Image (cartoon, rainbow over all chains, first blue to last red; front, side, top):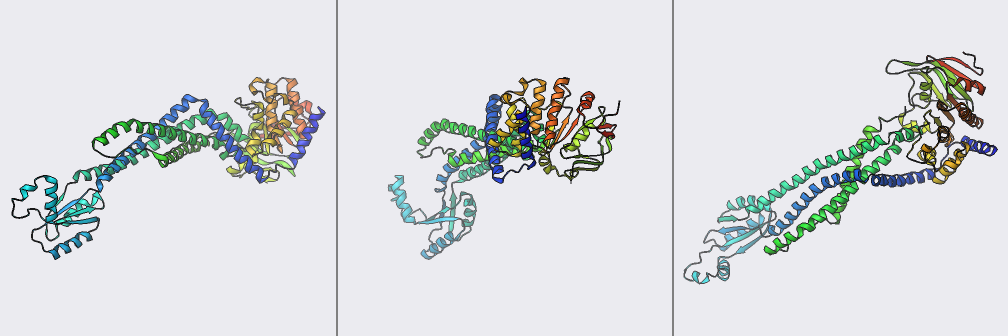
Length: 326
Length: 227
């Protein structure tokens, strides 16, 4: 008894000197608390595997849907990118144009905005090419005169500019006819544009969904740890201290969800790779699916993590204030 | 300078109920006192004001010379780290060991692991439960649980120790032991305020007794003259 008495007295004297904790001590224990909190949050997720798995799966699916759509749009864009280069406007020149007039027309065409290149094809060159490629070469020999006009091949920088260029070129002097056979490409471009907007809309909607799911999970966690929160507040735990484990839980849910989404997307890629390659082969194309990639994976982690953190933050802000010692 | 000073303090709840009506008293550093009175007399409210769970409606409350009436919300945790509280239902957490329960105030305040271990063991030694640190508190008896609660309340060496009916569920023998424990903390300079309606026990302690009645300080003195 004497021993415990002296210990209590010794402690009391130390207490009287105050609770001076050095800054280094505080910083170390702050870091340590972050580490232990992270660890215990991870353990809590593992300790309730079914509940956690459900939450993580919901997050993963919500992240997978817009990501998959995004990857599809990007892949189609790449595919159409190859066609972009072959998007050409054929400009046929009126017969009998003089050399100097042709030169000024070339300059005018090159001067239009959104034009990548202008190639002149003389009537003679067109005839030679026709002879070589069509197999009707001998038929042309019966004609006195070359029926083919001089022409230009105008390549637009962007498919979207093609229509405007066609109208502008039509108004130029000496231009007989303008042909653009790439309307389907423009439609595809518009579709891709719509696809991108859809990705954004779907992403925002499902992102909000994830925030709600994480928020609800964290709300339940807060309710089940009510006693602990009360005691921690009573013994001088700051709001930040109380908040920390729940924020880590939200962050981890988001990150795990993102990892599972990445796995699903990769699996989806492998599953589609076979048929896509067959299709590409049939079209004699070098095309193959582009997956998420490292950058995409990091982006997915960032999105998942921040959405989880936001959900937890909202839940914590709303519910922790209500839990006070009585 | 007095450690605790109530100056004409009133507390009216939102319902209109007046729990405290112009209570004034002082307690010096290292003093021990009992707070008694019928249930509803205002004992709990008085303790809640000291823990900053409730705020006074009027009057002033000075701790160590500092008025804490208007202490901002963000400063409350740091104030509470100077105060130890023992609850009637001890409020232990059953999802962790005795050691972890007692360590909570230190972790919250940012003590190092080594320091925490040393202080927790010292506190458990003081209440005589050093051999139980690894147990879950649910496996302990009522008296032992209350002692764990006391260890948690004093582990961070608070200047003030408050107890709300700490012997409410214990038999006289255990109650006397708990009170002796409080006396020991007073001996090392802690200001101890114990709310209790266990009159027999209080009378035997030969201590300052403050008696509340309908929110007013009815009696304040060493000898208990009521009843």
